[in-house]
Amino acid sequence: MGTAVTLVKDSPPDAPRTRPAAPAAERRRGRRENLAGYLFMSPWIAGFLLLTAGPMAASLYFAFTDYNLFDSPRWIGFDNFTTMFDDPRWQKSVEVTAKYVVIGTPLKLLLALGVALLLAQSRRGQAFYRAAFYAPSLIGASVSVGFVWRALFSDDAVVDRTQSFLGFHAGGWVGDPDWVLYSLVALTVWQFGAPMVIFLAGLKQVPRELYEAAEVDGAGPLRRFWSITLPMISPVLFFNVLLETIHSFQIFGSAYVVSNTTCGPADATLVYTCYLYQKGFKESQMGFASAMAWMLLLAVALVTAVLFWSQKRWVHYEEDAR
Image (tube, rainbow, N blue to C red):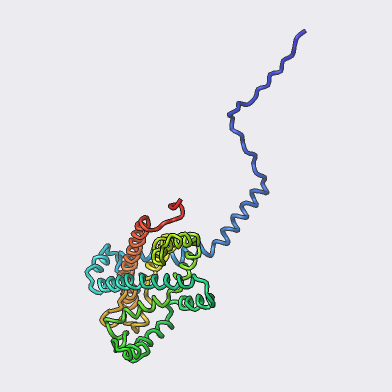
């Protein structure tokens, strides 16, 4: 009596398994969701292409041309850049901008950190003081602030009379080539509210236990600040240094208004962007102005790269502590 044997051919264990196809309705729903996402993003994409990417590409082309806004651009290669380095007023604008950045940025950050340390302590009316110190930053470097600042620092104005009463320099800051740049520095330092708020947020993240342990060990206020506060808020400090440095390179409105659209007596407030504006819109040298704009971009990128490189030496993150 024979025995029937049925052979079953199984698939090898390493055979690839095909994923079942998604239903057609699910695929259509996915396409509709993607389309809706692109539609919501379309205003930003259009704005970026038309208002940012497009003008940047055009200015890069104009930087290598002789273009005066009225005639067609004429390709001249690197002539704008070589002329720029030989231009004494361009060199003066670089000097004035560098002086403004080197003096104004540290003073602004020092004042912002000092006030933040005071406001980080619990006291009556704390919310009012925070709002009051932050208020100037809400105004920004507007034209109206520039007019008020020019009136304050003009000859025989409030600041001048106060200085005369105290026996200091008199004659007005705005009309004096030796003092007018410092009026712009005073303006940027006065608007320290934004970095102050960021410093406050960083100070709130410092554990109180570190200060208590330091007090037990006999560390004084300066020692606690140097050994605990600064290392713990170094990421916030780096962020403020980076942001305010880039912002200082872009100064234009306050310098243009305070100097009464002349960029100061003897070019004392001829900051880089002010000279760029003069070349582009007053002298119609749009090609030269475009080259200046790209040089400013390269300078800011270089300074930013140096700051990021330096952070390895003095910025301490939480992962480093662990």
